[in-house]
Structure formats: structure tokens, C-alpha cells
Amino acid sequence: MKSSARGEITSAVEVTNISTHGICLLSATGEKSLSFDDFP
Image 1 (cartoon, one colour):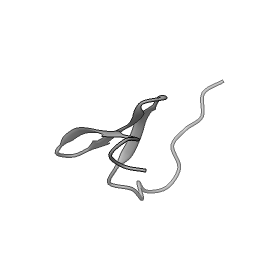
Image 2 (cartoon, one colour):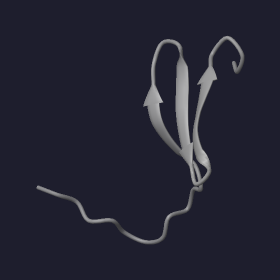
Image 3 (cartoon, one colour):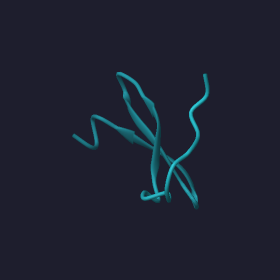
């Protein structure tokens, strides 16, 4: 089963990965990794 997208995109940033070290964010300008040590 595949879900179809509904409505408009409401966020300019997407969380692409969450790990024990931090999170990865994807935006129109590129990908950014935020370490939990630097960004609580």
C-alpha cells in the first residue's frame, strides 16, 4: 500500500536522520548535521 501526498508542504526543513550523535536536517540549501553535544 502506498500513501499519496496530501496538501502543500508546510516545512522548509526536513529531518532526514536521528541518531545517538545528533540529527540531520535537509533544506533547499543543503544538509546540516546538528550534534547533541552542540545543540541540546
